[in-house]
Length: 219
Image (cartoon, rainbow, N blue to C red):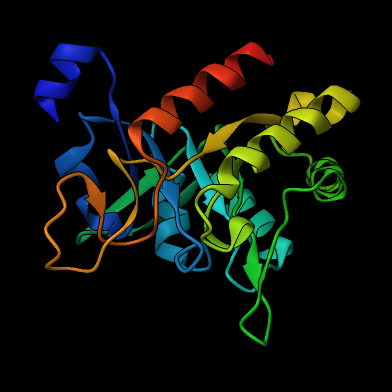
């Protein structure tokens, strides 16, 4: 991480799986996301309220946006709580924001929440909560794409199309979360393909580069 920072000037982003790890990595991170399975956990919410970098809170796997919005309220509010055996006090994180990643229904089907109507709904929910710095990152993979990694390209283009048709959406959308690696797709553990994901399928380097330039040209 330190080598990457020194050579590129870019700091890392991370998903907060274990809130207690923050002191060990705070000097190399510029962004943190709280995942769909952690967003309901109080310790994740409280820890997010004390971070001095933007924190994205994903909607839960079940898709209930009120859970995500409540996590934003918690993260933007000051708290006193126990952290690693110490009593700590936070000031609240004004840059806590939403991440839409789609959801899974009771039949195990992936359903998206990046469409125009979804983004308009999120804008309305933000207005009702009176939160600071309304913002959303659209996760183009996971349940939004049904883990069909090539769909990420189309999804990004659709969100940008929505931005062109609504000032509210354009102001709300701050970026995308795109699953990307060196080689297209995914592999099973043990296949040994260097640079190919062993978890969710990803866009390879060439497609990722092309998508980034395409997004930039549309802004």
